[in-house]
Length: 233
Image (cartoon, rainbow, N blue to C red; front, side):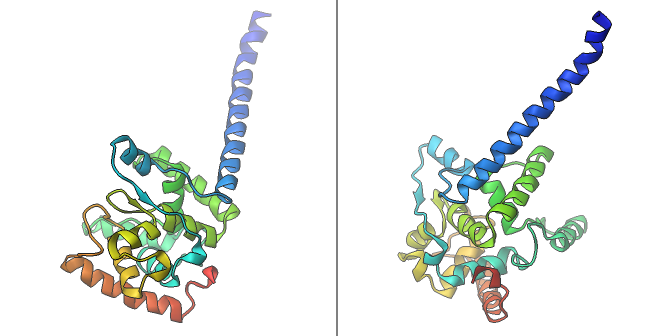
């Protein structure tokens, strides 16, 4: 009797672990489905700033209320294959790995979908656990949200300055206009500060940001003219 109980213990533990895993999967799917319909209420960086007592600027707006030049600038700067991949751009990952291995400036290969999954559901960090969860949530949002919602969430929760979250807040903070009123140059300047939004200023950019923004503006025109942003139309 004791031997039988001892043998059944691993089975019970395995079944228990599978049940917990199944519950977590269901909860994560429900979580993603809810965010398909409602604005993301909080992200880890927002919570960090709130705990630190910092003022947070944020105005959620639908994608239809954001100038198309903004999403084109984001695609040009962050993810040229946004409308073509299913969440992961393996070509960009390989290029980033080769660049980093060559000792050049470190650069990631994360897509807008991956960045959105990280910002909406996870904490900052570089652990294998977080990267694994990022991949999992990326698959979920690609399947449940679609490209338009991914871009909408990305542009509304991305950190775009000290305490500034989302493109509408950034547009008002830097240029005194709404997200719908951003010019191609202004949108490109906001996109140019995204890698380092705390150190860079879209309203008073340094020499590097100005040059980078001009390149993004040219690339964004190509994105629009060649229909590279077709999944958002």
